[in-house]
Length: 361
Image (cartoon, rainbow, N blue to C red; front, top):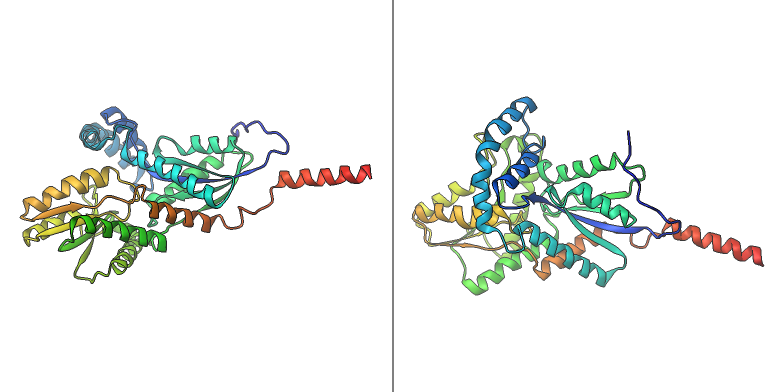
């Protein structure tokens, strides 16, 4: 196998430790062309759509990529920020803040981010880290709950790129943080702060991204971790079982997905003439198309048209200081032993200096 060219190396250069945050991804622009390229990469991942490849290739290239990009591009355009895609903007801000927070508690840790699909790409950022002599990398997928189609596919992309490296870095991965106290407290406080300003609802709905039902049957822990996160958040808020619901959004295709479906749940609450419903998405740590367009706009219409009263969407954690503090704690927990690990190059320099000093004596 031909390996990637190794970056120029100067003997004695200290090795660095890096944290690589990874989120799902986004098109480069809210245009049909950019969305088509993004969807081809995203939906072409065999972990995302578990169907026989020849059949799915025909569906994807014959139907979906010819019909969906234009509609999706219009949705992206409706939530696009001046700086770019909301997911990319918030992830970049989180990266910069984490770099600052880590800098207050340790030294020499490089923090960067990549997108599983789209840009900045995982191979591109890994090359960038390697050029900085980052010999230890903590991989931190920004998915609180583990799923094969999210966290695992991030690992796939990283491991695949490592196959092409001659001198691979040490690697650690964060599998999940669905029950981490900092994440739970920050999420609950985010909701509590919103209620302080806007009052409380009759029902809080926690909406998580959906997955096909078969993922649960095959052993994916995602469904259970979502429910555990919701239960811990509700306990932190002091809510009883009648005051909140868990639902799953973004169903795609005709197969059965995890239930209850968010849209159907909101329609039913609307039919019950619920006076006020608040929506929050604890499975997303940064606002994106699925929160800002689907939940904040589309599902709102489902609720109102069915006869519901007030509808409130509570934004994601984004750049909240308590969330960045929690992320810092999660990262430091997983960097244990690396931050004070002696660097081989530095040890060799010390040995050579000692030998030189002994020779002079």
